[in-house]
Length: 303
Image 1 (cartoon, rainbow, N blue to C red):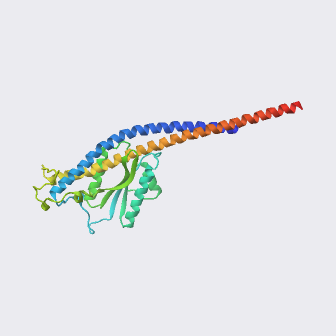
Image 2: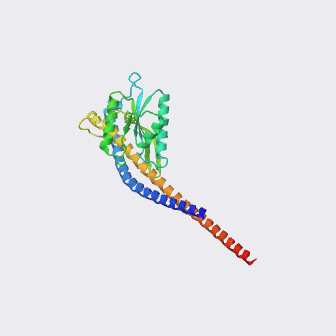
Image 3: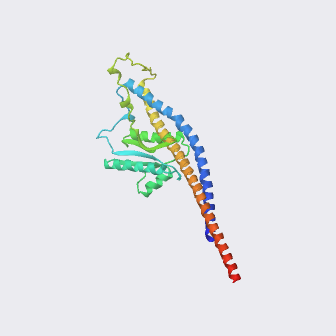
């Protein structure tokens, strides 16, 4: 009976684990739905701000702004900042591993190019991983389940100040980009300098008459001037992009944990069924053995 008793204990443990994973799946689903609304709600604003900056850049022509500067060879400090967004808790599948691997690949590439990478880590899992790899961490950032814009704004302003003062040549973010509920991709995106604003802007006004417009093109009048608006909008673009990265990372974490806990629950169901079959077989074997012993005893008494 010892084997059957051991199977019963193991089946009970699996049943208890299934209850835990099912509960965690339900919690992750609720958090994911709430986080998804925030991430999808702010993304149009982030995209519209960049679009407006492109329109302003087109009207200004030659753009000269500290947040758009590309340091020359003499001005370069060969120091760049890398913000790595991870979670505080595990049980989220390959979420943290994918982000950390992408960040380490970026660090190796930049180190091979002669750059020094300052690491700014958000999340206990990322901090533990980089400490284990003996990588120095410049600053530990606070990671919350529900990112608050005021907190992210302070972090973004810190990077803006360091970039404009020439302490950093660039700032990048390694995070899990939320594309859809079924697709998340680990990426390293550039926050500073504001890549793509000047390059993606239409041709300056000097290259075609100001009155000439293309079909479907909209002409804007800016008040105050376009340069004054750029001074206000470019920092907002950086802060909005960083806040969007935090939201995407949080949403990706919740959906990864939801999928991981669903898989764990399904595996627990399969294991419980397999253990039930093993228990039935062990119990049947035990009964057969006992009946054989009884019949053998009866036959021995007849003799």
